[in-house]
Structures are given as structure tokens and as C-alpha cells.
Length: 366
Image (tube, helix red, strand yellow):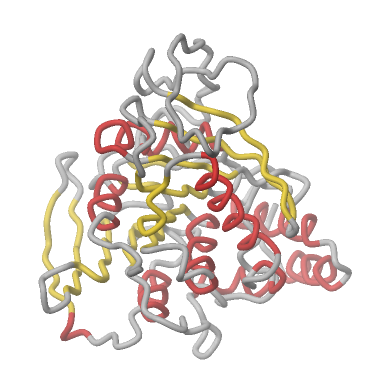
């Protein structure tokens, strides 16, 4: 499908008539240059059959006795640590809406409070696919934290994109931010969660929604990770979303956060889906006193041979408050991810590990 004024007008007409799902599909087709968007693969096979874990656990999960989840079928074992960890399907229903989600519980969970990381997939992805690509569950098992993956259904967006560009989904009291925050509350009720150490990270549309959550729920999320995403308020409809993705957030469009939120950003400098300038737009949103003098920039090379620039702003104690990782020659893909999932660049620095390292420096003050 060619990008043309006719297609833009068609998308605008669909948006004005309230058909956001159809408008999103049209824009995604224009961006991909074909009828169906496909994932970049960095030389690996596209869309592997990642599937879901099929083994059945024979172990019992120790949980708080005052808040046990509902009983169900045997819990499947995660493929990341066969025989010892848990990978559960759940369904959240709240006042703002409902979503399914998957939760990973490490083998050494025994009812003691653990950090929680919310992972928001990109367009056309699923929780299983995103988990396989980011390998965040393996880090959860290694370091000791819970991981949850909300799923965006086709009924909400035909390409499974989080609706970061919709004003109805940029608010605290309703829409997708309220649903995701509700999932956090449900998990904290069913598991022992250290609620001072809850974090959110996402890719592309998921990264943009992570920024929305940083603006709308700073009292819930101690830090955020935005990979190849955009700032909250960069768009108010599908047409302005397309412009922001291609050119960056326009001056004055991005909503300033009410308070600084520790933020780590990853972006490929050859990303043709979301302009890398959005990485700076995100930091402008959350670093309320941002100045170039606050950041120390170094150039390094990953173990996979990809060069990258790392800019870090630390506080007076030396704790990293804001970080930008610009991966050279990388496209629209999760840096350091596994080829088992879609939209990954395995040769880049390990975004998952670096995000967790950054996150665990931060907690919400009591």
C-alpha cells in the first residue's frame, strides 16, 4: 500500500467517524509499505512459532495466605526455567475495562515481597512473543522479581497496539492506563509485591504507553523504561500519531509530567518507524530540569559488536536518574533481545538487563 494523501485523508475520515481500530490498521499498513505489517528480524527468521509453555508444574507455589488467587488448572511451567517457575494466564476485570495478562513467578518466590515489572508489548505482538524476545522472565528468575505482561486484544486495536495516541487512553481515571494500574493492584493483592518497587517498560506503542503511565500514575511506578517509543501527549489522534512517529513530538504537544520520574530510554538511530528524536522528547517530559550539562555521554560497543552512545544523568549521590541509550545502526527493535521473539536486535546492548539495573536503584518513598 503506497503512502499518499488519499490514504492520509482516508485515515483522518475514519478517525473523525470514531473508527479508531480501522484507522490504526490503515496507518500501520502505510508505515509498513504493504498490506500486512511484518516484524524486522535483523537477519533472523521472522515470526517464529514461540507458542506458550506446555509442561505442567508438580510444585506448589507458596503465597500469602490472606490473598490467594483463584484456583484453576495446573500452572504451566515457564520455558525459561523448566520445572521450577510459573507462567500463568490471568483475566483482569475492573471499572475501566478488562484485559488478560500473563504473570511470571520465579522459583524462589516464597511469599516475601518482590519487585514487579510490567511489560507492555508492541504492535502485532503478544505476551508470549514479547517475553521470548526480551527474556525478561529469565532475569526475573536470576535476580528475583515478578513480571507481568498485559495483552492488548484485537477488539481494542486491530494490530494489538496500545492506544497511546487516544485522549481517552491518556487519562488517570479511565482507559488503558487505569486498566494497567488495576492489573498492578490485582497482582499486589494476590502476590507479595513490594509496592515501592513497581516498574513499567514497553516497546514502540508499549513504550509510548509506559510514558503515559509515568505521567498518569507516578505514585504507582517508581521508574519507567521506554524502548523505541514516544512521550505522553505526542499525539491526540491517529494522524498526529503518524506525524509524531515520523518527525517527533511537535513543540508544545508533549505533556510535561507533574513530577520527575526516573526514566531509561533505548532507541535505534536507524529506526524508520519511530523517529529517534522521540527519545529526547521522552526525557524532556520526565526530567523537569533537563540540561545537557547534567548528562555524561560515553561511546561503547556491545558484546555483539554494535556501537552505542550512553548518556546518563546522576543525582548528587551518584544514582542514575535518567539514561538514554542510542544504539547505532539499529532499527525498530528491542536491543539485545532474543531471535526467539519478534522485533529484536540480538547484537545490541542488553536493554532488559540495563533496564532492571536502572529500575532497582529506585523505589517510591513511603
